Length: 190
Image 1 (cartoon, rainbow, N blue to C red):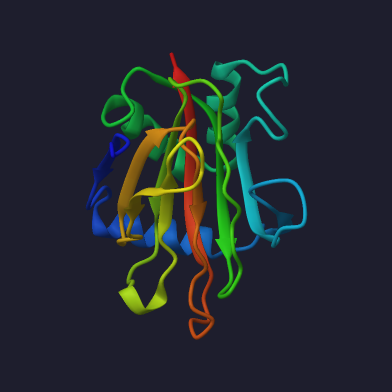
Image 2 (cartoon, rainbow, N blue to C red):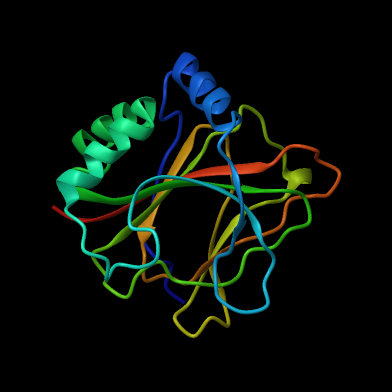
């Protein structure tokens, strides 16, 4: 069995910045009805900041997407600037959004792209987490019938992998009253 390439960057942001991002993501602006795959699936909360909304066939300019991010969420725009100078060097932003899943809500197995060079980057913004809360991101083989990697939602962690890898957010314990909030940066080669 081969493990997909997942790059993990722990302690991504300075504690003060991480706290500010967490506070920002917990603020107003959430919409309800997001889902990770079409069909009869659980819905969850989301915030769209910039980029493609429906799919990659929309007519968008990557420079305009960056500008949109700086207009809608300047703090996240600054983080994007640091990411493209570091862990996401050589990539262009195609979408930035956050997902907020309450306890017991499940994601669906899905791919973010059908192009190998498109990357999915998930930032786990919460200040604390424990294994009892669950909420891992699971990556599967191409057939979707075998787990090949699990990403523990460690606070202040960025996980980067090819958008072609089937993945799913597992439900968080219903005993936890806060949302499982993740911040996504979807990219393609610049």
